[in-house]
Image 1 (cartoon, helix red, strand yellow):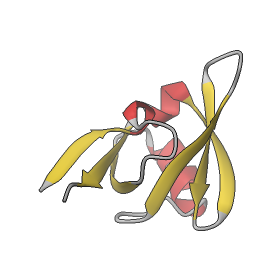
Image 2 (tube, helix red, strand yellow):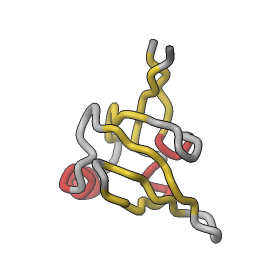
Image 3 (spheres, helix red, strand yellow):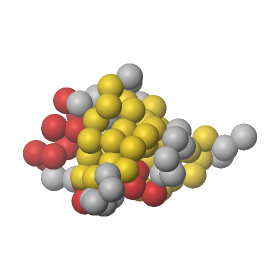
Image 4 (cartoon, one colour):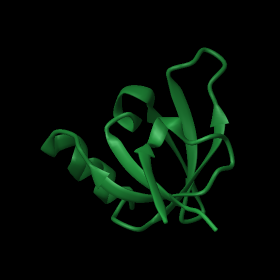
Length: 80
């Protein structure tokens, strides 16, 4: 069973998979160029101490995404 939530609701080190990008076309294009395509594994690994930004492991790369953008990215988790 899949649980769908926004990317900024994933806990640190919790594995999620890209489900949908609900943002403007400009932002969506940038995210797609960074590898955030459907069913890609994404894991939050760092939180900024000043809040507002988190770093994610995407295909072995560390990508920083602002909370306002990660709120518009839907992910799903796989439950056992």
